Length: 285
Length: 313
Image 1 (cartoon, chains in turn green, purple):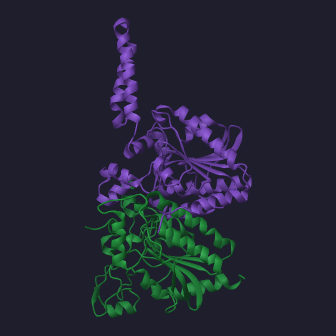
Image 2 (cartoon, one colour):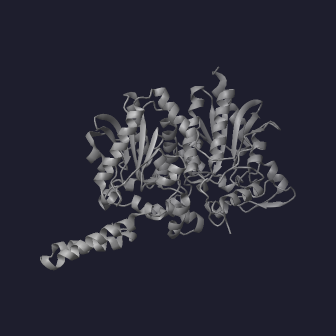
Image 3 (tube, helix red, strand yellow):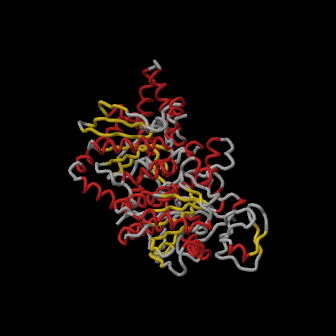
């Protein structure tokens, strides 16, 4: 049986993310163009299809590896794990779901936070992992992001958040919803100190995550093809009872509508982040 | 139509009584009337005592439930409505303006669902588009500029899920409200009158005091939405509503709201005036406390409150 967050993902884009890393020497099929790619080549291309440019989902550790200087990531707040505040049970109790997600991803929550270096510059970095309960935001993610923002303010370093999330984690009810306010309010700290916050949106950035910290970056970048929005396509379709435009809520479309600053290919991300930070820090004491 | 499934027997009794009162045959009906009246009192008790989560949700959505418009008409004097986000259009899902409550001048904002079909459509059932949140923020910042306290009234199924709403950045419009409400230097009081639907409700709820009517609900997702995600079946909303812990009692237990405002025993839709009196009294009581705080204290109180929300190990 598929879990609730897997149902949020359209089939053709269904993540390869269940595997934490690509075993080399195995053939992979691109979910978009159906071409097969050799594992080694896929890793070399940063998990971008060598034929059509489709960006495969990355898990948080792969993302960190791609974006930061080798071995520079020092994890913070790793020990925070969820409680079961509203005793939520669907087909399984919430603690059971968390346990399964931990086993599947090797993570303790749907976000990794810490210090990292990008081309030699120290930054605070948060990376969400869609493989962990759909990258959903509960109390732990809210707390980790908020602490990281405070850490940025304390250490005077820029903040980068890489989002991949279906939204708020309903298994924690109202407490999840309130994390939207908590994280958004905390971002005022960076404004006071002229500290840059770059938000990178990846497939998918929706709901409570997009309606809080993800859409509040000083600069907002997105990977090609990312689904970005508030309400999910299915909900919108049900509400308005008509078909949605083909590129609806895709990064390229969001760029046209003025919602994001740039669409950046995976291979260019690290250097682009670095260059933008050069500008945003150059004239600030 | 406005009768909820668990009110049916009570309504039948009331109809019966009305018919008896109309009839001219007074001698035989007199004792019947007395008997029926007693029965109705008993039935009211069994109908409205211990409503479950789903019944509460239905009460919270009741079309006759007093909303923002009723509150303004009944409790506010000299209301001057202010319109528009200055960019795109005036969103009628949120009414906003200057108003006086018991001699105190406020900036007032609230979702409006509308009380009949024509009205519902006009107000988009209380589901705001980005311009609604942008109008709200514009006016809240205006309130700060002129040192007016802010009152927000929450009653929405959620932010509108539509193509235009997404194209005009619904997510961003909500996120900016959340961030900026965190630093407004005037007292903010929010009351959930009916339905507090997810981000679209939260966008007006970053307050010093968050109050809820006793049969209001406030949650991260609608029971229907939850049921549709979990079981592909919105009809299981009743089951989902119990799991989501969205009633005023739940939110008080989770330390999210400061106070539950009592509704009359037979619920707000059966006694709107008394309900609104209670709402008004609660607002004034909290305002008198907040009005003594300095801007720094107001900010500290609000920011600390949200900073501490969350359960983790």
